[in-house]
Every structure is written in structure tokens, then in C-alpha cells.
Amino acid sequence: MYLAGTRAADQAEARATPAGTVIRRVPGTVVALGVVSLVTDISSEMVTAILPLYLVFGLGLNPLQFGLLDGLYAGATAVLRLVGGHVADRWQRLKAVAGIGYGVSAVAKLGFLAAGSSVPAIGAVLAIDRAGKGVRTAPRDALISLSSPPETMGRSFGVHRAMDTVGAFLGPLAATAVLWAALGDYDAVFVTSFSLATCAVLLLVVLVPNRTRLAAEPVPGKAKPSYRAMLGLLREASFRRCCIWAAALGLFTVTDSFLYLALQRRWDIDGRLFPLLPLGTTGVFLLLAIPLGRLGDRVGRWKIFIAGHLALVVAVLLVCGPIGNWWLALALHGAFYAATDGVLPAAAGPMLPEGLRASGLAVLQTGQALARMVSAVTVGLLWTLWDVRPALLLFTAALLMVTVAAAVVRPLEATR
Image (cartoon, rainbow, N blue to C red; front, side):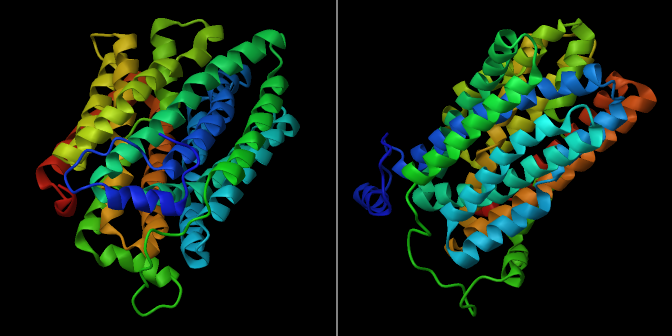
């Protein structure tokens, strides 16, 4: 692996590799983006690790109120994913648009200082932070996709997600260390998070080459991509089915915060240790992201994607079912992310024309984000009405049925 890759170097590496040969190196653009994501995720996870405990136990939010905020956190990216993807393709400035998204998220970290204990203000800051993520995600994934040969795209996404997960692993540790050093002052966490996010923006500017696509490929009938062309991608049957199934699965996916809160409640884990719970998930994610990405390249990415959702079903059952095992639940939760987070864009990328790669991935990710927003709000409502275990078990039963249906129908004919 190397950091200083350029567009020409990445293309040369792709051309120099004979068909069927295992590529030993990942394009420099992918690794550079991985470094940026690593630092960004340390910043983001420092805040994410403390929020559920702070909101539920510190501010006394009930599950429905928390579900609304968690849904906002998941869904605030939705519309802006479309905007970010479209603008990046239309301007042919993938790096610039991604940089704007990283910058918005960095500035949002300072908003937590002003928000204090006001729930509406915290919700607004979360929306701004996730808006930045929404703007940057599709252009960043398009850069990874366009920098990688199709036959090893799963590996490239796996490497990026593994580096991203190193940051997610270090974030809770950093938050715990800062809280300890600052004697429990949450403002110290927010200031440190902002500083790291700013460093990530600078790393993006310095390390990531300013590329648009691997080869010139005009969009039929258009000088520049339009929203109509972006939505027109759904006319392609395989891509349309991919979007529908991703959204359907997202509709019944239990969000991280609810899983951790349910785990904490069942085993009465000390509040001071709560920020460390995501380490189990991220540790397994880190170990499996690259192997599962490579396995998806070989046996089919959709199969790995489906297997990941089955892992989530078992994880929730281990938290809420009669046979409890918290450490195995966290491990399977990490396997779920390793099998889905980078595998889905790797599966969908080859279906999309290069000139609309960011736009198409934005459409896919928007449907998934909106579905997960609905999921979070619904789980919060059911938890308020019935309690946590029946709420999560009902969702898990629905997720299992949709997962089996997605496995049987096999919607991704174009991607093995």
C-alpha cells in the first residue's frame, strides 16, 4: 500500500495487472481516503460513544424522544446524499464536494459546546453533523470505486472500511481518556473532536488526488449530469432492485444506539464503561472488513451482504432472547457491518456509469438512510409502549423474513 498515489499511477497499476491475477496493492487514492476517514472517525466516535448515555441517563430522555433523535442522526444525511452525489458528478469535483462535507461536520462539533443541555439544540447540531456526512459519503465512495478495478472493488472498499474502523475503535478510547483527564467535562470531548476533524480536512487536501473518473465517459444526451439522469438510473432493473432491497432491509435494522442501550440494561453495565461497548463491534469489523470484501469479490457480494444481516439477527437475539451472550452479540454486530458497509457500494458500483457513479451511490444510500431513520423512530415508539425486548424481537423477526426473501429473490444478477 502507498499514500502518494495519483490518477496516472492508479490507472497504470490497473493496466499492468493481468486479468485474473490477484492484485497485491490497493490504489493510493483508496489508502489516502482511508487515512482521512480514520482521523474523522476518531473525532465522530468520540461524540457518538457518549451521546446515548448522556441523552438517556444524563438528560432523562424517554425511548421515544431518543428514537426521534437517533432517527434524525440516521436520516439527516438522506436528502443531502442526493445533493452531494449530484453536485460532485455535475461539477466533476468529487474531492471538493467531499471536502465540503468533512468541513461541515468538523464545524458542527463546536455546536455541541453551545447546545448545552437543550435537546432541540442538540438535535440541530446532530442534523448539521450528519448533513456533512451526507454530502461527503457518495463522492468519497465514488472516488474509491473509480480508482479500483471492478474485479477487486470489494477489497478496496474493505481496506477503506477497515481503516475507517480503526478510527471508530480509537474514538471511544479517546473519549474515555479525555473524560478521565478532564474530570468528566463533556466540553473537553467536543473540543478535542473538533480539533481532530479539522486535521482530517487538511489531510484530505494534502493526500487525496483531485480526480474525477478513470476514463472519459460522457453521459448520453447530456453535457452535464442532471437530477433527471440521476433518478433515471432506477430504470435499470438490477440497480433498482438493489435499492429496493437495501431500503427494505434498512427498514428493520436495529440501530447501534438501541442495541447498546438494550445490552447495558440487561447486564447493568457501569455507565463509565458504556462508551467502550462499541469497541467490541469495531474490533470485529476491523478484523473482518478486508477478508469479507475479498470473499465478496470471489463468491458474490450479494451473498456476503445477506449473510451480514443474518449475523445482525442472531446478535439481537443474543441481547434480547432467552440465551444471552453480550460479547458474542457485539462480535456478530461487528460482522454485520463488515459484511454490509463496504460490500453494498462495491456491489452496486459496477452497475453505474462512471459519469453518474456518485449520483447512483447517493440514490442507493439515501433510500437506506431514510429507511433506518424510520426504523429508529419506530423502535423508540415500540420501546415506550411495550419495553425494549418485545420491540427489538419484533423488529428482528421482520428483519429475518426480509433477509430470507432477499436471499431467495437474488436481485443482483449483474454482480454475482
